[in-house]
Amino acid sequence: MQPFCPRHALPGALLLALTAATGATAQTYLSRAEVEDHMRESAFCYHPNDRIACAWVELYTDLNPDHLIMQSGSAVWQEPMSVMEFRLEWDDNALCIDDETQGLLAMREAAGYRFPFDLEGLDLLPEAELPAMIEELRASTPINSCFRYSNDPANPERLVQHVFYEGLLQPDTDPVVLIPRFASGVALIP
Image (cartoon, rainbow, N blue to C red; front, side, top):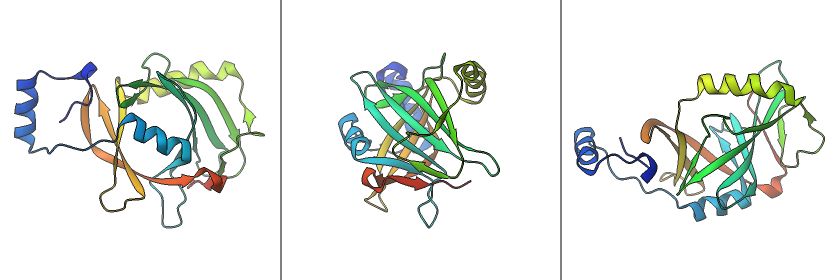
C-alpha cells in the first residue's frame, strides 16, 4: 500500500511498516507535465482488445492549473454510446474525483460504438438527468478516488493507470493505449 500525495499521506513509520509488510516496491509515476503531454496528443484507450477497440476511452479537452475537463465514452450492447463530461481535480501529480459532485458536467449519447474525437453532433441529455447520475456514480465510486500513471514496462507506447482510494494504492491496474488525436476516433467494445 502506497500513498500518492501529501493530502492522503500516512505517517512515515506507518508507511515504512506497510511497505515492508507487503513487500511493495516503489513505483515510478509520470509527472503531471508528462501526463499532460500525452493528454494533448492522444486519447486514452482503456483495456484495449486485439483490434485496439476500447472498453472505455477518455479524451482530455481543457487542461487548467487546478483541473482538467475529460470526455469519457463507453458502450453497452443494445444501448446508445454514453459520453460523459467530467471535471477532474489535480492534486500534485494525481487526478482526483470530487466526492460531492463526482465532477459530472454533462452527458451525451449517440447511436453506434465509435467515439469521435470531435464531439459535435452528439445528443446532449437534459441537465435534469445529472443529479440522478451523480447519485449513481457516488454510490459506486469509493471516496477520495485518485489516479496516477506510469509507463508500461512491457510496451513503451502504452501507459498503466494506478487507482488510489483514500490515498492507498489498489492492486488492480488499467492498461492504456494512446490513440493519436489525428486518428479522429476509436471503436468501443460494447
